[in-house]
Length: 251
Image (cartoon, rainbow, N blue to C red; front, side):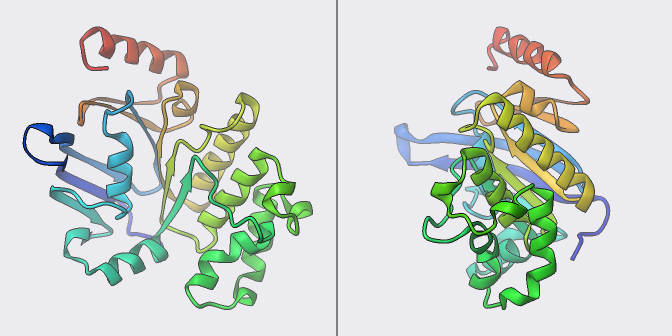
């Protein structure tokens, strides 16, 4: 089910604090922004800037100390653990730096895993599976196990798995971090094509200016705050923006 047009995900004054007292770490410090339906957004920032924390809270994998996350008009803080799990299962797809494939399963079995966990029959997804295998270019590798696939092929399987149930929102955490430049470029093109074809709201955390350059919009985080954002930036312009922020003490 597609989310209504407009803002797919909205965050309001998000704060995340780890620990207590003098050793407490403020990972997010009053983040507010929106992610329009069908838009591809990259989140950039130095290590410790809060970008992965933000992504995990957007996906309901972590809870904020305060603030709100609204997905399709629903405030995640008002959902029970069961309903939050269903929200993630029905509306979200996750792609991580580490592929998290089951080593004893074939490529197609790994792709079908979310449906099987949800108690659905694999036969229901026969057409969707073929569509995704074609999209990620693995039709001829569908019976191969992860140890028989390259790193790029494993990430393609992970992307197809994230897309199986046609999620409204795709959350990607450093999806090219373990890949060489050429393979990483292919994965970025795949994410971009998927976002366009299925009109998914795609939110990607990355430290790579080339990766961020594929996005419609780039949000820059520093010390848990949004310090800048822009649309239509090239990789060179992104690098220049990062240098400017670093020189201003915000990198």
